[in-house]
Image (tube, rainbow, N blue to C red; front, side, top):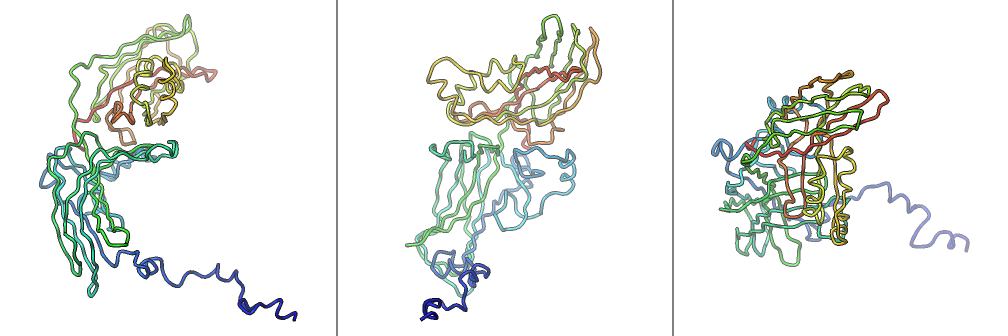
Length: 406
C-alpha cells in the first residue's frame, strides 16, 4: 500500500519530472513547423535589386556603413571603412541570412527594379494561391516611449504586383519586377524612436496556412536645394553687468559636407571663465502634435539659456497643451569640443570652424514635421564654464540640407 501511494502507476519514481528541463527537444523548431505544415516547406526566397552604382552613377551610390542614430565611439571609423567596404555581393541592404552585401542608397527619382528568385529543394513541391511582390513606404514608431494605443506604423506608399498566379512550385524560378514613377516624398531615416523605411516584400499565399514572406529594405535619399535666403546669424547675449558676448556665423543653412565658420566676440567680461565649448545637438521629436510643437518652440529655441528647457515650452490653449504632452523628444550630443581655454579679456575674438563631415554620427537633413509625425532639428550649443563650474548656455538652430547622395 505504501509503494502504490508513493509510486503512481503513470509516473514511476525512477523518472523525475525535472529531468525533462535539462534535455533539448529532439526535433528542431524548423522540423516541428514543417511537421505541422507551418514552415516554408523548403522554399528559399531571394530579392535582388538589379540597378547598381556602376549602371546609374548619378542616381545610386555606395555607403560606407549601415545608417544608424547612434554616435560612433571611434571617430576614425568612417575613414577606415572607406578603404575596406562591407562585403562584395549584391547591392542593397541585404536579406537576413543571405550573407554580407554592400550598402547602397538610391535617389528618390530612381525606379525600384529587381528580380525575385524562388527555389525549391529537389524532389519537393509546394502548392500556393499566388505570389505577389509589394513595395512599401512606412513610418514606424515602435519606440518604447510611445503609447501602445496609437498605431505603431503608417504606410504612406503601398503598391502590389502579381508575380505568379495560383499553382505549384517544384523548381527554381527567376521573376523580374519593377515599380516605376513612385513619388517618394520622405527620405529614409533610422532614428531613436521613429524610422522611415522603404522595402520590397514578397508574399507567397497558401491555403489554410500562414503566408511565406521575405523583405528587402531600399535606402532612399533626396537631394535638396540651397535655400534662396541664407543670411548670416548675429546675436548679442549675456548676463547684465557680468558677461556680454556677441557671436556670429556666416550663414544659417549648411549642406551635410559643409564647414561652419563663425566668430565669438567678448564685449564685457567680469566673471572668471575657465573654458568654452561648442557642441552639435540633434533633437528628434515624434508623436502627435509635432507640427504645433515645432511652431511653439521654434522661435524660442535660439534664445534659451538652458537647452534642457526648450522641449518644455508650452503654448496657449488646452488643445495645444494636450497634443504637446503626447510628443516624445530625444536629444543627442553628436560632437563636443573645446574652442577656448583660459579667461578671455574684453575685445578678444575667438574663431569657430567646425567640419560637419567630422561628426562621428550619421547627420541627416533637417526635417520639419514630416507627415505631421516627427521632426529632426540641429543646434549649435555654446557653453561657457567659470572657475566655480557654473555653466552658461546659448543655443542657435541651424538648417541642414543634402547636396549629394553619398
